[in-house]
Structures are given as C-alpha cells and as structure tokens.
Image 1 (spheres, rainbow over the protein chains, first blue to last red):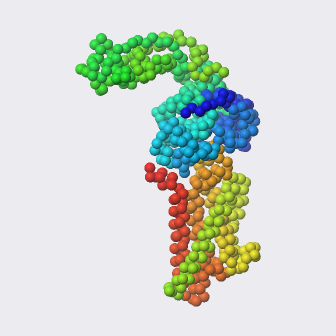
Image 2 (image 1 turned 90 degrees about the horizontal axis):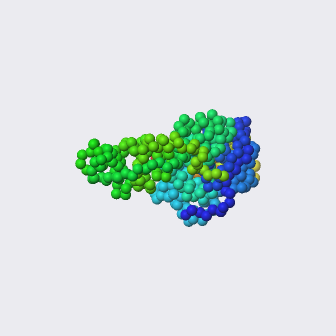
Amino acid sequence: MPTVRYMVSCMIRLEGVTKRYADGTVAVDNLSFEAPEGKITVLVGPSGCGKTTSLRMINRMIEPTEGKIFVDGKDASSLKPAELRRSIGYVIQHAGLFPHRTVLSNVQTVPNLLKWDKKRAKDRAMEVLELVGLGGDFAKRYPGQLSGGQQQRVGVARALAGDPTVMLMDEPFSAIDPVVREVLQDEFLSLQERLGTTIVMVTHDIDEAIKLGHRIAVLREGGTLAQFSSPDDLLAHPNDDFVAGFVGRDRGYRALSFQRAEVPIYPAQPVELGDRPLPDEEWSIVVDANRHPIGWVERDAVEGPISQSDLQLGGTLAEEHGSLRGFLDAALSSPSGRGVVVNEGRLVGTLRPQEVLQIIRKAPRPSGDTIAGDSE
Amino acid sequence: MRLWGVDLGELIELTLDHIYLAGVPLIVGLLLAIPLGWLAVQRKWLYGPLLAATGLMYTIPSLALFIILPGILGTQILDPLNVLVAMTVYTIALLTRTVADALQSVPDHVKQAATAMGYSPLRRLFAVDLPLGVPVIAAGMRVAAVSNVSIVSVAALVGVSQLGILFTAGFNRNAMGPILIGVVACLILATLFDAIILSVSKALTPWQTSRSGS
Ligand SMILES: Nc1ncnc2c1ncn2[C@@H]1O[C@H](COP(=O)(O)OP(=O)(O)OP(=O)(O)O)[C@@H](O)[C@H]1O
Ligand SMILES: [Mg+2]
C-alpha cells in the first residue's frame, strides 16, 4: 500500500513570517523554521501564542502579513489556494466533520474534489478508514453517531484520503480521554512511520509534543519562536526559563526516554498457570504458553498450583532495546522489585532498580545520545 | 354541484390557481434569495444594506404592487404574471434574511474544515453550507408559504382568479357562505404547504433523525 514518493525535498519552510490581524493583534512574529520531509514537526506553546495561525498560513487559509512560506520548494503565495489545500491533508481541531454526510462521504471529500473516479475514491476511503481502525460498519454512519474519539479518527482518515505528502494537524488528539488518546497517538506514530508523510502538528500539550515530535517548535505569547530543536535537546538544554518552565518539572525523568544504555539483564526461570511457585525464589514470574509475562506470584502467598487469582499485576514491561525510562519504570512498578524485560512481548529476563539507577547516574547527558530526530 | 352558493368545479379551479400563484413564487423566490443571502454573508459591508432593502420590500402594500407592476412589466392588469412577480418579491423579502441566517448557522469549524479540504467558496455553498442550512431555510419557507397563501387572495381586487374571488363574491352578494369556504380552503392550503415543506426538509436532512436515533 505505501505509495511511491519521489526523492524531492518535500518539506515546509517558513521564512520570517509575521501575521498581524486587522485589529492590530500580532499573532505570529517573525517566525522561521523548517519541517523536514517525512518527519513530524510539532508546534507547541500556551494558548493564544499563534499556533493555529501559523498552521493555517501554510495552506493559505490565512495570508501572512510578511515573510515567505515554501511548500515542497514552491512559494505558497504563487499557488492557487484551493488546489494547494487539496494537496495538503488538514485535520481541524475537534475533527470538524461534515454532520450531513456519512463517514464514508466525509472521507471521500478530497478524492472527489480531486476528481478521482468513483470506485477509486470509495476504495481509497475504505482503505484509510481501515487504517485508522474504523473498518466495516462505520462507513455508513453519520458523525453524530460516533464517539469523540471515533470522530477524531475519521478526521485523520479524511486528511489521509487524498494521499497527501504533507499533513497539517491542529490538536488532533485533544478532547479525548487520556487512555484512548494514548492509543491513538501510538497508532498515529506507526501509521506516520509507514506512510512517511511530512506532518506539522499543533498541540498545547508538551508531553504529546515530546512523544510525537521529531522536531519541536516552542512558541511563546506574542507569536515568537522560543526554541526549535529535537525533543531530547529540548529536555536537556532549554534555551531559557520560559522553555524550561513550559517543558515542566519532571523533564529529567522524561529525558530518560531518549537515553539508551546496556543494563544487566538476569535470566529468569518462568512458571506457568497450574505449576507451583519456584521453591528457591521469593517471587516467580508467570508466563503464558507463548512466554508472554502475565504476572508475578509470591511463594509464601500461594498454596498448591498457581491459579489466575494468585497473580499480582501492575508492573510495566521494558523492551529489551528500549530506553532507560522504560527500564526504570519497569523496575519501579514491579510488585517483586525486579523489572521484567521482554522482546516482542516474550520474556527475556529481569533487571534490578539499583543497577538501573547506577547506570542513569553514569550515563552521558542526553544531547550526546540522540534517538529521535536525526541530524540535518 | 354547489356548496353554500359555490360551484364545486369552480372551487377546484380557484384552488389550483391559488396553489399556482402562491407556490411558484415560493420556489422562484427561494432560488433568488439564495444568491442574495449568500452575498450578504460573503461581503460583510453588504449585510446591513441588503437585508434592510429586502426587508423593506415586504412593507409595500400588496394592492399597490398589483396595480403598479403592469406599468413596470408592460402586462395587462388581469395578467397573473403580475401576481407571480409580486409574490416573488415578498418571498425574496422574507427569505433573504432566512438564507443569510441559515448560512450563518453552520458551525465555524465545519466551514473551516470545508475550506481546508479545498472547496472554493461557491462549491462550499452548495456542498456544505446550504445542505446544513436546510432546517433554518425550511422554517423560513413555512412562514413565507403562509404569508403567500394569505396575500395572494388580495389579488381578487384586481380580478385575478384564485380563492380570494370567493371573498369579493361573498361581499358583493352579501353571502357568508363563499367567504367561509374561501377561508377554510386557504387554511387547508396553508397546512398543505406546511406539510410539504416539512417532509422535504426531513428528506433532505437524514442525518438529523439518525442522530437522535442512535
Ligand atoms: N481573526 C482574528 N482577528 C484578530 N485576532 C485574532 C484572530 N484570530 C486569532 N487572533 C488572535 O491571534 C492570537 C493567536 O491566535 P491562534 O488562534 O493562532 O492561537 P493558538 O496558539 O492556536 O491558541 P489556542 O491554543 O488557544 O488554540 C490570539 O491572541 C488570538 O486572539
Ligand atoms: Mg489553536
């Protein structure tokens, strides 16, 4: 399914862009940044700092007062607005679906405007709906019959349907409860990776920015750029007090997401439901038939074979080649005091919190050791 | 056959004339009010003047209009075209504001989404704004329909055939029968128009019923 993309530098560049509204409000002030091809660039900042305005200048829903914007190397002001917009996917805040059209028809909007033939438009719409997890029956519903989270997915599907190389997204995951939001974000990340779409996204949630962004532009009140860097750099080296304050208190912990290091992993002998706990260990790890960890049992708390109700749950699992944050979290959240390490869901071994902390203490500061966002 | 001094064949004919004279201007007036209402919303500076001007048209006395129009259109005084044009003027007077209200009732984020998808303003009007404005437009149409059914009867004074003829006939013959029948027929007609507009509006807005149904 991935579409072939030509190796042109398809990206967005803002050069000294200023927007002064008719009433004199300066919403965006001399803003410059580049959104690299195939990456997610996030605009983040407090309410009213000009995020939406910046985003809408890219597809010319708002005309800049000064400065230039280039899309795919072309000066946006030289392109026909309606045509430019059809080539760019746009996800509007709170989905903004057309209430009078079915989900399918909403998603077909851009293909129809691009005059694709009927069958191709419909097939494509069904395909992207499937992609966002709304296959089958949903196509026939009206937006009023969907939950908020489902509407947001349709909003994303609608933006994807025209097969754009560039997408603009205005707070696509706001107004969704945290659990569903987390799921949507994860799905969105893997989708973006698969499709390689260049994305500029707006959020006021710094956690979301750090999770999703390869590049983050922090804006401050008055629409000026406070910092433009990769997420790890933002956490490790905030430019000033404003950025540091905006990034938040637990940025040290969050920065661990971008650090990788070898941590000693101890082999563990697992047991299965129906077995008895290991006699020599205070805690035994229980796996299912596929070696997927399903919980811990405490030797002294169990009599006879292990049953489902003996399991102690609650620990997160660390990926074998994951970040220090994952290791630390697994170690701290485990009922047994030992973190569980997995590879593709299968048990690899366990790790000890003290050793993880020791490694964190010795680890280089994050700037030297980047994962997300590669060098330009 | 006669009922209260009214020939039934004549009653049916008068009723059909009445439907024609009140109904056709309703459609034509709406078709003309759409561009006017859209213009008022598109060009902010036009909004006030345009709505004031169309609103004022409603205050022209109908009898005066029936008498003046032949001079403007070059028609005979008995020509039904005068009545059709006059009723169209009243319909425009009522529906221009209705259309403007309907277009403004469309939520901003929906309009912005449409623009962001790449609709040109005119395409957006037909694809998004008007379909979503149907409930508001239908409400205005119901008012205009009742108004038309009632105003058309005045045309009896200039001799154009429709139910109003029953009023002048009753008055001339000093008979209540034709007047009562005329009033009842007008009421039934107004109700009929109302029912038609409601069901068309329902048919055009399937998403509204299904929303409450879920
Ligand atoms: N049409 C307009 N006319 C005048 N001022 C405007 C207009 N639109 C936005 N503004 C102002 O410009 C500034 C930036 O607005 P913008 O919508 O870009 O902010 P934002 O960062 O997206 O905020 P939020 O997080 O609340 O969505 C605000 O001060 C806003 O009041
Ligand atoms: Mg905004």
